[in-house]
Length: 307
Image 1: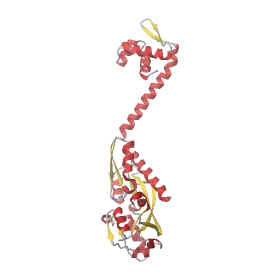
Image 2: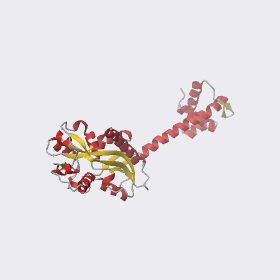
Image 3: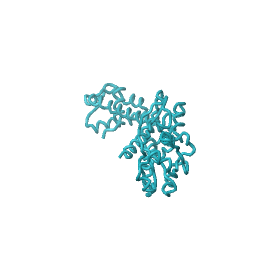
Image 4: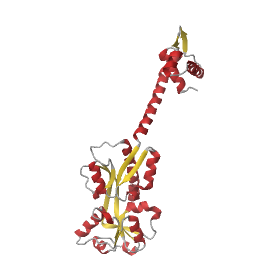
């Protein structure tokens, strides 16, 4: 069997014209190098060198082998450099911005994907609110993030939409889901809403408030909590209804209480999520790798939600 080590010894011998000079160039012992050439000749069943005074000259067989041996070693060296390059750039800490409920869309599966494919990366998923994340992107303290477009100004940012989601009304009472949920109905509904700490910046609340104000009503709540999961649990008990995104319901899977159902709002309301970064920023390969995996997960969920 021909080996790369044998080809390397062969090429050095061609270049230097003797086993002694070739061994010195490679840092091998002369007997070891000449043995590798002998094994190569045996494997090819061909003589590769002839004695010429104190040196060696390549045979016709050696000249035929020469370009292939050179190409083989060059390919291996190129492959080694490519792998080393990937390993070198896909290391270090990636701090990637996420909107507040991104965990419900991305989950632990994203972290598993990143670390399995790029074990040299240390990952930080940072953020509680899209508006704050967008501000950090503009300041340059984050390279990239996934944000809700309606939650923040995209001025000064390059955005790539990856998912469109729909806002829906959720209740444990089938009768409340049988009628169109108009702004007038929403104004009188007993509601539990999440994101109490960010209520002024929460895009969902602002969207609902605009619709109700346009119809001459105000958005009122019976209960306010921090996270959508708690809001859904309260709704499942029949204490109050909630409004959330279809993607959140889809991501809950088997964890979503059986009693809950949902229906679209009238008029229907949507949100677009996008990968964002400053247009003058060339994303590092590691950040780009994470952004690509985030986008893939969001797009897959987009297909499920639309389906």
